Length: 281
Image 1: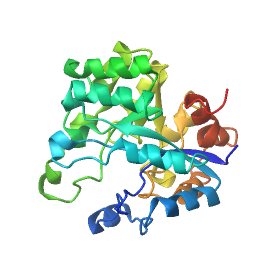
Image 2 (image 1 turned 30 degrees about the horizontal axis):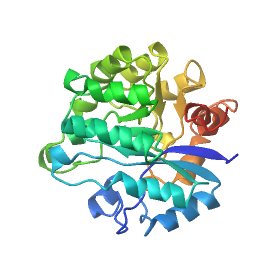
Image 3 (image 1 turned 120 degrees about the horizontal axis):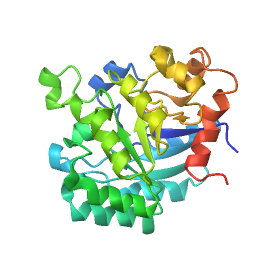
Image 4 (image 1 turned 135 degrees about the vertical axis):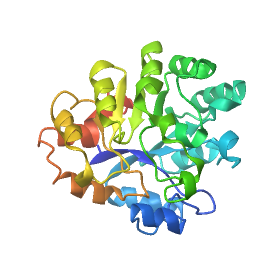
């Protein structure tokens, strides 16, 4: 088994374009140069002895930008089966087309989940118009990873580039979905600043909800996140880097100094994700 499982990885697309390809994103995250290709990314994860979950995003309705096809992510998994699995991207605004794509992700492409970003996609997850999508994901056994809290997208632009942070608030928008679909496993992506207390309350209250710790260096984690990860939530926290925004080895090094207990580190870095993703029996 690998050293760790990074549940939040954004690969470069077929043209080598990455989340950190723009200068503004590199400045916001103080990010290093992104990988030039998926092959370079796969080599890095192999070198670090890490397994990763590749994430796609479809926010076409709100942004006007066509998404990278989910097939591309499935192909990467075929090329690098020892390093990656994938979650597909669907746009809830697309209605039945999103449901059909969800089914295709599971049954044809072999994906394990979906990735959603409400503040970029401009939707509230608890809008009942989207409940057929959550119902389909639940029936298919897919995990749904939902962005929470603030975002670097639009940061520094006038009006935040039009991005409304409130779409990604945990309560009530994600909590309602977790309550109405108790068989749907949900990962809340990132410490949900400025609503991390709501996120922690949900994790304590809802057995079907988890969180990944991506998008932040652990040295900046709010104290309650570390406190709860060490105690009540030790089986519900997952290592995620948000690569290439943060390199996974840098994240792991910072985690050693963040105050996590020795017995919690292997749970957070690997064991919890392995169980949730079905990578071990």
